[in-house]
Image 1 (cartoon, rainbow, N blue to C red):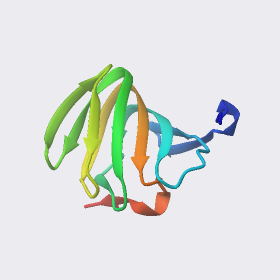
Image 2: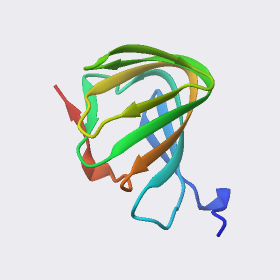
Image 3: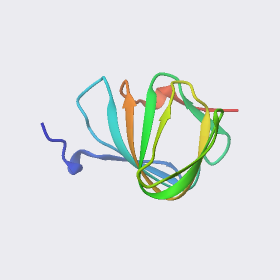
Length: 113
């Protein structure tokens, strides 16, 4: 099965973060691409209440500010967020592949603090 670029939904999470969500037909996981150029979220921090998230860096660089520490990321790096991990991200033209398990939905992604 192929999932064409034409099936992508663009979501502007903030002025500094855009996500392109692929119409992947599985409930087990989801796949997206993101660009962060600034701070996400703009204020406070975020968490995912239902899924684990994996971020793979395609290009650019950034810092993940997590309750587990601060982690510099750049091309080729991968960061794994545990379910419920609280974080915010600084990105400089940070292009990411996002894989979430189970499938991501807006209702499970919450701003906290």
